[in-house]
Image (cartoon, rainbow, N blue to C red; front, side):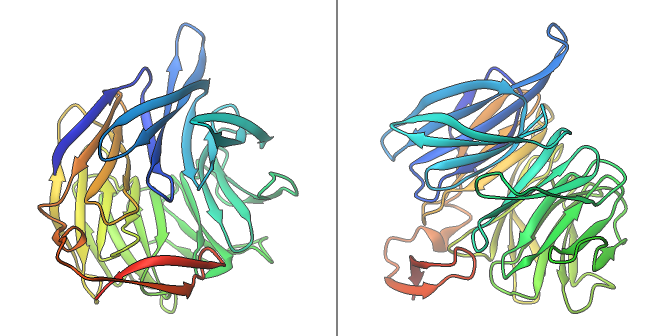
Length: 341
C-alpha cells in the first residue's frame, strides 16, 4: 500500500466514504471538546479526479460517528442523537432533514430495496426509518452500546446488529420484538457486519476480539472460517467489482487488504500499520482504480493509498471488459457494471 495523498483535519476522524461514481469522497469527524464540554465534529467533502483532489466544503456540527455516501446525498450518525441527511449540489452539502432518536447514534446503514435506513445507538436500540426519516420504529436490541448495524443485502426485511455485549443478533423487521438468531461466539464486542457480495448465504463479521469471520445463515452454530488480524475489525469493505478483495480498518493494527477464496479462507496481502494511528475508516474507490481512502482517529489523518501492487487484476489495462446490465437485488433497479472476462 503506497501513500499517494494525505490531509490533516481539525478533528479526529472515524469514517470515510466514496460516492457511487467515485468523483467525491467524504470524511466524518468526532471528538469531545473539554472547552465546550460537548461532542463536536465535522462532515468534510472532497472532489476527486486523477488530476486533482480538493476539499469542497467542511460543515462543523455535532460529532459525526458514521455515514453512508450515496449518489448525491449523505446520511450521517451524529452524537447529538440525530440521524441527518445532507444533499450534494454544486460541490456543497446542505442539510435537508434530521431525526432525533434520543441517544448518540453510532452507526447507520441503508436499504435501497425498501428505501429505509437502520441506525444503532449508544443505549442499545435499533432505529428503522424511511428515506425521509419518517415513520420511525425502535427496537430494544442490546443492553449496552450497539456499535454496528446493517441490512442483509439479499433479504430486505432482515437486519443485523452487533454490540459491546459480544453478541451479534439477526432480526426480521416484520416481527422484531425478539431476534430470530443470536450468535454468542465472540470474545469481545461486535464492531462490523456485512453481507458477502458473492454468496447470498454468507455474511462477514468483525469483532473487537481481533477476528474477521464468515458465517452461513443456514448454520449459525459455528463460523465457516475466521482470521486473527491483530486488531479490532471496526470496518469491513468488500470491493464492488471483485469481492474476493476485502479492505479492513483494524483500529490499533492499522489498515489491511485481504483476499478470500471460494471456501472463505482469508489471507492478508497488504497492510499499513503505525503506532500512532487508530484506524476507523476505509473504503475502496468504486471503479477498477486500485485506490483506497482511509481515515484515523487520534492523528486526524485522511489518506489515499495506491494498492495496485497487491490488487493487480483490478487495474491491468490489457484486461478486456464487457458491459452488461443485470437486475441488482441490492439497488432494486437496472445498473450498468463492468465485468471482467
